[in-house]
Amino acid sequence: MTERRPRKDAARNRAAVLAAADTLFTECESPEDVTMADIATAAGVGKGTLFRAFGDRTGLIRSLYATRLEPVRSAVEEGPPPLGPDTPPLQRVPALLDALLCFKLDNRHLALALEATGSDSPYQAEHYERWHSLLRSALEQIPGLTNSDFTAHALLASVRADLVEHLAGQKGVPREDMRKQLASFIAEVLGDTGPDDAPR
Image (cartoon, rainbow, N blue to C red; front, side):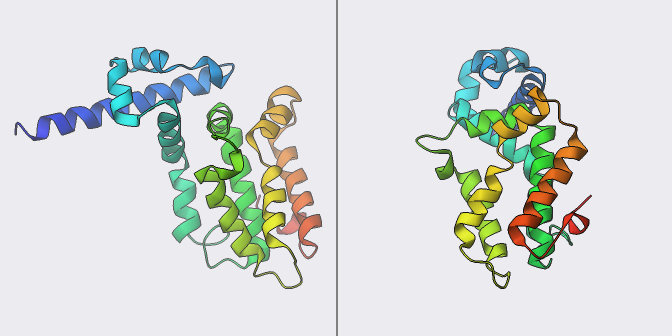
């Protein structure tokens, strides 16, 4: 029993920290406004607890992002069509990007915070490399499509968090309009699929 309590306390503190960070990033005007001290205060723990559990602010943001993204990740890795691995690439590519757009719309400030944590380049961040690899693999299966590596980069650029924030937050573009515009763009890039094939 004495060995289990610290683990239970650590798990409870971790959950409290993630919940507090989640709320703060959702309600903030800018992700830069959210500090480790703010999160510790909101979670009712000391700053040392945060650094022991997550290493630094970037580690905490990554953990929170991964927790939020888990349902999408699960659907992509082992779910049914249109996100799952058995989906034909012409249907899967639009579905993957639509899911990523919707996730970033629902988690705008958190996504902005994560994309701002890239060390020298956002393209070297683990989360970016994972999505790029996934898209590139799907694009390589489409007959006649060349340079899948660059195409994957170009498609991911259309759902960058700063662009999503600019369009949704500053320009006020409605969610469904953004999804339709993205579907049309993907259709033009792929050439053999159109908005009617994209997820709704």
